[in-house]
Each structure stands twice: as C-alpha cells, then as structure tokens.
Image (tube, rainbow, N blue to C red; front, side, top):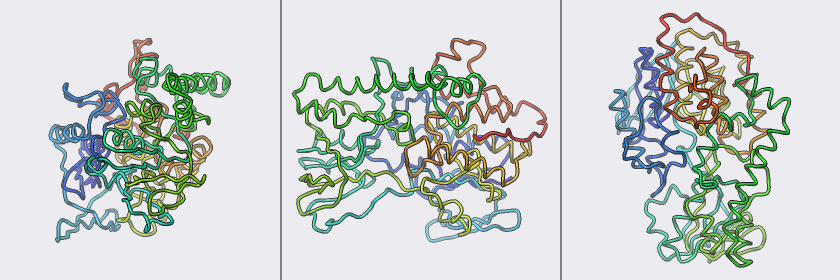
Length: 503
C-alpha cells in the first residue's frame, strides 16, 4: 500500500520504518522545515527526562558520545541519522491541509509554500503528537494591566529573557519545573506558583539511577493497570492488593523522605518551603504522561529560598504582578504560564471524523491506542505514549502492519468501542486528569507492550532464558530489537482474531 504519515516526530518515523518492512511505500509529511516534532520547538537547555537506554529505535542505538539524558540537539541529530539509516522518505515543509475519502483511498491536499497538490494514498497514519499542537493558554483577569510580560515556555527562545528579572512560573509539570530551575542563575527572583504539588521522581533515589528500580519486571509487575499480561501479575493484583499498595506506599515514603532531606539543614522557613512542594495525595494516581523528573537541584533551590513556592490558583494580574486565589500577591516582571498542552486536534480531517475524535476532554479514544473503530484506513502513531515510548510505537506499528496484511482479524466496531471505553473508564478512575490521558499508556508501558506482543503471538519475555535478568534487569529499547524480524521471519501467518481483552 501507499501509506501517508503526517508528522516527522519520533513516533511517525517509527511507524514509517516498521511499515516499510511490510513492503508498504511510506511517505512522511512534515509541515515544518525540520524533523523532530516537539523536539524541534523545545525551549533552550531542555533534556530528555528518560534515559537514552529507554528512548531510541530498538534496532538503532545512540552514538557513544551521547549524554545519558540527551539534549534536544542530540535527539534531533539522532533522528537525522536514523532517517538516513532507514532510508525514510521525509518531505519537509509539506503541510497536510485536508483529507478526503475517495472510494477505498484517501486524497491528501498538501501545501508547500504557495503551491498545493493532491495525492492519493491507501492508508494514512496521523502522528501529530500529544504536545506539539498548542499550549494551554487561558485568559486571566487584568492581563492588560500587567506591566510585565506574559509568555508560555514555548515562547522562550533564549534564557536571556530571565536576566535580572523577577520571574513567576505557573504550573507543576516538567516544563514549569524546568523553567524555575533554568531561571535561578539568571533571575533576580524566582517564584513558583501551583495549585497542587505533584509527585516528582528523583533522577537518583538512594544513590541509584531511577531506571534501575523502575524498569525491571520485578517493579513493573506492581503497576495497577487496565490489562495484565501474565496470570502471575493478574493474580497479584486480584488476590493480593494489600501487597501492591504496600509496595507503592514504600516507594512514596522513600521519595517523600528524599524530598524532605533537603530541608534538614535549613531553618523553619526552608523546611516550610520543602513541605509546600511535598505531595500528600496518592503516588500511583500521579503516574501519568505529565509525571515529571525533579530537575537537578530543584529541591536544593527551594530549600535555600532561591525558588519560592506558592500553593494557590492564579486568579489574575494587576500592574505589578500576579494575584492568587488565597489572597497572595507576587511581584513579577515576567510570568511564564506553563499549564500543559491542549487535547490533540485534527484540523485536516473531515468534520464528522473530527467530531468523533475530539469530543473527549482527555484526548482521542483509540482501540489498542492505534485505531478508531469508526474511521477506516486511518491509524494513529504516538498515542500509546509511555515511559518506554519508542518500542511501544514500533510494536504498535507492527500490530498495525499485521492488521493491514490480514494476519489479525479485528472484532466488530461495537466490540472495539466497548474495549476502548473500558480502558478510558479505568484511566478516569485511576489516573489524575490530563488532556492526553486517554491517548497514553504512561507507566503501564510493560503491560501494554506485553499484551500487544501476546496478540502478535510473539514472546514478551525478551530477556529469557536468563530468568534473573528477566525479573531484575531494567528493560530498555534494545530488548525489542528483534521483534519485527521475528514476526516477519514467519513465511505465512495464519489469520487469527484479536484477544478478547482491553489493551
């Protein structure tokens, strides 16, 4: 088939390289003049929260000189090398402005500069990302009175804007935390405003890099999820929930002690500042796509007063600063509103499909996080976002390739909708709200990948026969390097129905 992929971020590229293995002709359309999606529009000094071992194409490792937490420049250079290595057809400055169904095909209207052309494709994969289409930017009372500058982190192209300024950052996600930490060495004053302190995962806990305790199966088996891939895991969550709760209480206690340790050598004011950013709610409910790593020295800066935390809701502005719901007033020269992203929108799709896909506040609802039952010959890349994101994207693409080839027989539209509704409802009951909650697997990456491999009839035990490594070694992207080869090595695939489970 001829397959159009809209968006040249890492997910779209993963789908292109995997689907091309099925002999499909894949063309990637990117509206901007460079690849990389969100990485191409990131703020200065941003780094990958994940480690390089967990974030790369499974069969194409990072160069040896790359940082453990790569910079945006390193990510973009890596993607350039991957495009050349996999010979992916990427067309920059090609904006898809409309899709129209023509019989069994899609007609794409594509704009390049002032010129427009129409192209026919058999299948379309949408890969515009969870975060690339727009920042959440509500209007606040009194903005016109404020003598300073109001921006989002997307507007910051140089950290010089913080020099000698009084900076107020609003929000508690990764971008907000980065903004506060990056402003400290430049600004005259840094205030951090948030409604609720969220759980932050330290890069090192008890001196150990966080990937070692969080990425082995011995840990992921305790993750509550809408799907569990093994009978042992299902039995643990069904019969021994007290053990699961005890495990996460222990993790929460360790992180809380780690945070509070930064206040030990400070006065009462320093301890109070640390208390203000220490969450008291459930740790597990905060495990979502917006879960942030604690920026280097963030806790230290808060304890020392270089960052002053304020728990309260931003209500508006006056001439000199920000007004909070608790009556507090913060003097500021620049306010950074880092309030997250909007739910994904698909302006190029026909109206009836847009209404179907954009109707939920927490994002597009998809079957297996890849397809919508009511939209034919269209799939989505990157909406199974999780902490092992790139392998999940590759396996989602492999699953789609199996469906397109007829190896997997999908259930009825009604049954698929019941499945995606069950997953949506589980997330709403167990995961804190975010605009992309439904189009992510977040920390349930192992459960999702296991279930997809099970459906593809591929072993999910990627470290066997070494059972010690399977249980206690951290999983990384390279563990899935042979999955596509393994699947395609079978000369024929007996068509089979999908598993009757919610993935």
